[in-house]
Amino acid sequence: MKIVLYHVSLAGLEVLSSRNLPASASQNAGISRECIDMVSTVHRLKYWTHNRPFLTPKEGSYECPMENYNQMSTDFILLGLFPPSIIGLFLFILIVFIFLMALIGNLSMILLIFLDTHLHTPMYFLLSQLSLIDLNYISTIVPKMASHLLNGSKSVSFTGCVIQSFFFTTLAVVEALLLTSMAYDRYIAICFPLHYFIHMSKRVCVLIIAGSWIISSINARAHTVYLLHIPYCPSRVINHFFCDVPAMVTLACMDTWVYEGTVFLSTTMFLVFPFIGISCSYGRVLLAVYHMKSAEGRKKAYLTCSTHLTVVTFFYAPSVYTYLRPRSLRSPTEDKILAVFYTILTPLLNPIIYSLRNKEVMGALTRVSQRICSMKM
Image (tube, rainbow, N blue to C red; front, side):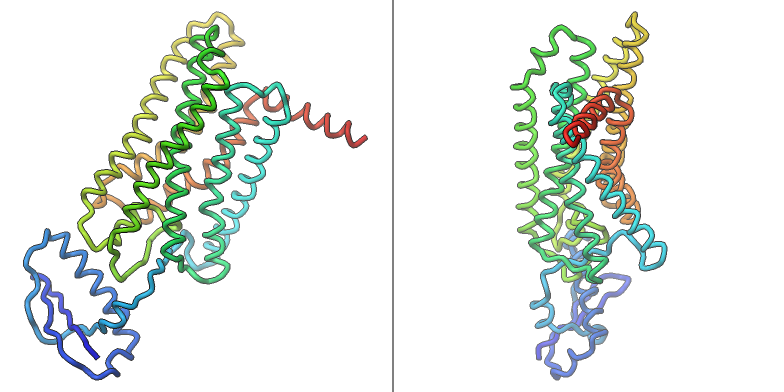
């Protein structure tokens, strides 16, 4: 059997000469795992050092069967969010409970807006779309994470990982653009109330939703195509609880600085610029509200704006902080904690914030409940 020996020293990397060893040499599972880590390190350091000459023959050290290296599984290993302990089990149960509440809340919001004619306005049409996105958003992450924990397997196929990454990226960008559209809706409603149904007609709302989905799909497709064609190192362990693009790129056996630049550009276009637009819109809104003569009107405007700003903060702040940081400043643990906010908590909080703090939604809930009760009687 053909064996290649590798050695790494502090002064640099040195490749060992190839030689023939007996087939029994590959039987040692411990050596095989060590070889996987070594090959991964060699490939990464090769590009981190900008292709400096670092390989010279030397005897001794690590053994790596090339047949095993070439025939390695293409599956990825997701380390997950929870530690294998009682605390981890408790956190898992909590996440499942949050997932179920998010499903119930967002489905209820969609049905309520559909059934009550008083909510057939541009604002609530956008809100129903937000609930639909959140419903798919959390369903892309939590069920897979739960199945891994229940089955005791953390393996995910290459195709499954890329598909999850595509849907996550698409839904994240759609939500970012939709939140921006909702901020524009509030800006027009408060600052230009007489022109509201001109600027926010049904046709405009449909174009906003369709445009958001098309732009998001194109952006996600570009990232997915890149992930499909980059070479990955043998160590395919993703230190995350879902197939996030930056976490997958760290496993690439090539220089990815150009792609990391495109991630930075995408984050700027679809997170930073929309957040700036939202901030400007609400700045104008708050200024207009301040000059309102009606105390009731000011209270209603402040309430509407505060609910939206709460949602925006929970979604944008951790997302921007995560994706704008360079790789050298990232921490896997920190990335996972921040990801919980915009993948799990935001889909739960959106229906709660928009319903419990909104008199129109609560009134619609009362009317629909009375209608259902009267039908039963």
